[in-house]
Length: 298
Length: 298
Image (cartoon, rainbow over all chains, first blue to last red; front, top):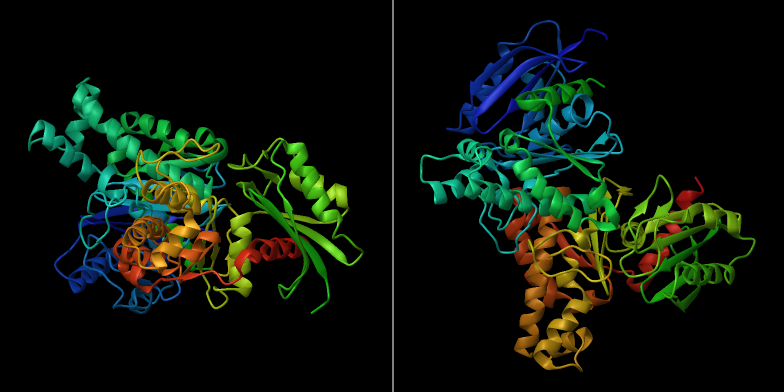
């Protein structure tokens, strides 16, 4: 390869991951910082700091993965659900002027999907959909080999008319995100097992054979399947990649999801589509932000 | 324009509409036939007949709008929900060889969306989504000025986990189609007003101020809004176009839909997006099939 390097920054609700990324998706000098959530100015200062400590003459561009819907025409991030960021600032221009480098901007889950497509679970696929299950639920898609650069906010598709309210600034009801995240799993687990049990412990209990824990994960998986079924009927992907921390629930969630997807998918697509776990782990968003930075060089 | 003409064929569950289409979207010699539903062979014979009666030396290509998910790579139509057609035949090659002309193939609702984008309600838009409400519910999308040529089977997104079963060959539950079509409206109307009342009469009753009729349409509109809300969060369209016969319900359905979309849409998109009726009426699918035929010439 040409030896070019970029900085990738993955902005999450709780932490900022940043690193230097090469064209093969390798990450060097990976750094982690707490996400400042006190104000937009503090948040921007936190991002600036994360970039500055990695910046050197070898860096050709910067890419940001942001947990907001992005308007690629204006380079602005729409109102984020979990962090203090909105479209009042021209994010791309601000960063580009501050660092004197080309800047790419993408939704964090779109970036993760892009990384899994190039270097992870979907590297053999042509059309893929990704869902990230963490504090929230993000989505991304690669269609016929090209990253879909629109919203792809798959966590905010309605799977239950008039259902559970979303968290944060989202006023919607019955969105996928309200049912399938680690946060949702923690809430359900605490109803049954008490306040000390979180999503991680729930998965451990299921692994140990606790039937109520298995049941909770089964219910989450079936609702995840309803959401994936919708996406199958929209995009007909070969592969659906499940990432984010709560993907650790594995087949406790994915098997019931597969059952529902088989039922919901048109024309046999629900049987054909493969639903697999992401392979790049917590680095996916960071690597994807790097790919977005390389795209900004073109 | 260059005077070129194509044949557009819109295959519906009950009728085949065919006509000669020019590059400005004008239709000449429009013809209508009942759709043969007894077998795939009968159906193909019906399509052949519809083309043959329009074919002359001025026709440069043929386009078909088909109520199935289409695989553009293979040129095959997937299992249709309402008609006897499946992927056992190479539809595009068969038609191209039979008539000795380039053949384009699209899902019928994708074709209708394409027509509304070029010549109808969305002619000023850049990104639009269309839903057709008829016997079934079809979907199509134009993203950044380009027809999305994947499935876009928006009638089969889940809006109610484990909800109402679909009709036909679809095994899904709680799909948008089960709630928002003319057929769904007829079922709901008959529960309240008896077997003589269909969707048309229901809309008339609402127009006359019958509160139970208004209520039924309101409930349909709110569920339509849940489906549109999902699509807004996926595609962030400027415009959502509602076509098909049941679009005649107009604001009795669209106003409650707008209310729900405002609630479900992220980052203000639910307030920004305009939800309007289609303008091309029953000709949209036919004109769109013509556009697909012109694309097949390139």
